[in-house]
Image (cartoon, rainbow over all chains, first blue to last red; front, side, top):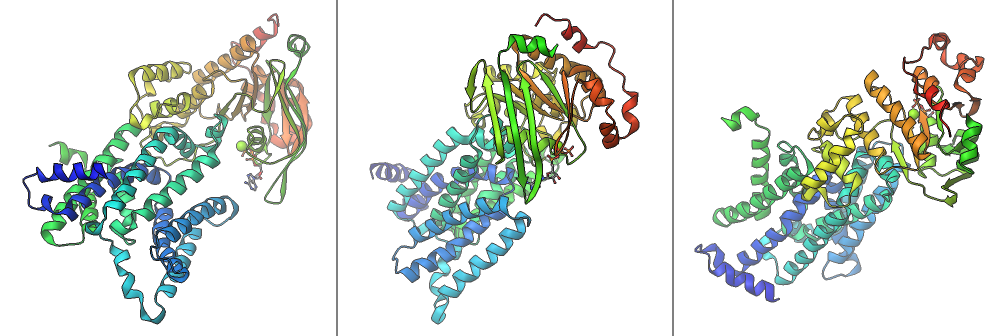
Length: 282
Length: 264
Ligand SMILES: Nc1ncnc2c1ncn2[C@@H]1O[C@H](COP(=O)(O)OP(=O)(O)OP(=O)(O)O)[C@@H](O)[C@H]1O
Ligand SMILES: [Mg+2]
């Protein structure tokens, strides 16, 4: 891809040793593409109290991989995406049908889906092969995957541009939204499908264990400062990108897992955001 | 007065016939018949759990039903009239960083507000809010508004753009006397100038008796219907609400009386 070539040349101009490794160039580009998406999506995940829901989606990747193995897929991305989307739609439909509270339903589903994945993958003691999915590996990102993230970033931006307002109104009150001729079923379903897609496609990057913090932490930190949706979204995106870049570079020097290092940095931002205002302004 | 209104608008605005709604196996609304003329304010009263909110949500098209609901706006049948709706309660996360300006802007325009609300739009939102003297709330977060303040914001949104049918679920609850007066004044204005039909669910019997054209007592089905004074002296209603009904006094400057003398 021409854009990736250009990016590589630009990186060569930087006076840092890490900037000259191909894997770091790709990793940084992937981070720059994915983190703003997570920042934006996270704002509505937190507003709608969907953090547990997205955690279930992330963990469903395990079962997706397992199904892929059973069906003989070489690359489990397709089964992972399909399963996560099914799950997202299923939960969305179930939500209104059952009397149990949402976190009970999700809790049960979470346990089932993770257990199923582990049982299938651990046949003949083979689970060790799949631990890389648990923590992810940004440095192993391929140029082809980077183009995927390009596509994802464009889809998320476009979606946010077209459906953002409807999403906000629906989250405040679905009936109010419907009275303004918003198709709330479409809004809610498409949002969950988009979440499923983004979470599952990024799972290679950051891993099943911590992918949810990518969504939740930047938004959670930003909302402690924000007075309106604009500053909220902007804050979440900035914190997300900053954590991504800083975490990646630090992990290079420390030799640690990049995903987790990024999350640590984002958690630090959250910690700062809950300090009382008078400490910060002094 | 009702006859006078019927003469100007040839058609009913909303016609609800044999409406039955079941939720979770229970019959919530049982064979409800309700005809609303354009330019008419209908008050719906009834005990808690009577199905008032369910009726409004059914009119919004949210709940499956048996029977028929038809809307006729300026002479032609329509499936989806422009509805202004004020829900009874919002159940959003109170700590959401959504400002009043955000909510108004998201409701009245399609430009994405997360990318920023333009100065022009901000002014528009301000003028929308000024309808209910709520423009000073523009920059506040919706989670930190008082009950009455939020109600004013929701009313302002429901009136913009001008709806063809206004469904109000206890919009007056928590609004102070001045706000209430403003509210009834605006509703009356909409009705007189624009022939908008208004369905108003309320427990504010004092206000309702002074400002609505027709009062419906709903409890699963229509128990009583007619002029407010007649329904309010109905003994069934007294049985449902208790004897406090007898002490109703109207606000000093009764607008509905003035409306009655109007030349519709
Ligand atoms: N989704 C639902 N499933 C089952 N029952 C429901 C559902 N929604 C409402 N109900 C029931 O329908 C009945 C009427 O509810 P509704 O909210 O319409 O009452 P209401 O007249 O608006 O009462 P209030 O004065 O308290 O606002 C209640 O008994 C309620 O429990
Ligand atoms: Mg109600």
